[in-house]
Image 1: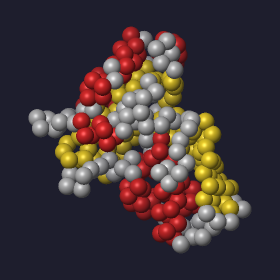
Image 2: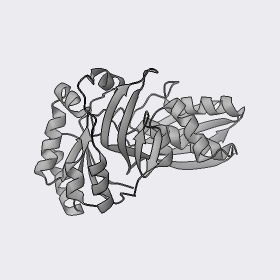
Image 3: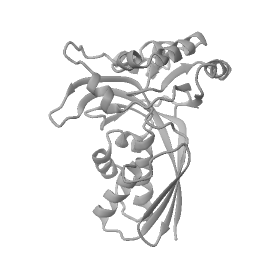
Image 4: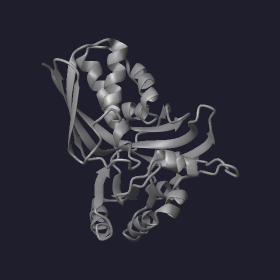
Length: 282
């Protein structure tokens, strides 16, 4: 029986604007997405029939609500493949944290099952399947740095923004995307200009990049959870060039200039929260 190991990387939103609510119930977005080195590891082992999912590390649901299960079922029904699969998820990316951990696992599953089952689906075809399962899955398949429009699925690759020092702080809260979107009031909203952020990224002007992080949801979630502002303030006091809540939160990331500064900042942040991670953009 064949075995395959796939790494599953998280993502942050360097900018996130919500333009309007669409007729299909989704929201039209304008966002800059960046893959990061914080990762899960998925081990796929073929078995005779059915599916078995287990996890190590952080606790996650292992029933039919899991995106990995939904991905397997969709691809099995589409392809007619009858062989089974055992999937072990070594979970490190915080759950319901604005880091696309579940979507990344689904993307890894699409890649792995495509290979194990010899489906020969192209990246474009996998992305078309992915968006039916979750809006962040196409980006998790593409990776790197990208401008996202539509529901985040219309992707334009941007100049790579690799090897930047990123500190993540997660307050241990669960914030559902649905809740965050429902709290938005777009009545008087003026669309964000994210062109300056992209220009600064192109030049690798880190101070300018940090000054142009934007997230329309940040203030809403801070109102509900003031700890998010405390995390941002703590990072800025430790020398961050800019901080932002990622996606619908509650994880905050900070951009730092060098390894020495970020290590010191990590120690300072651990004084107020437990879940702190150093990673890089990839």
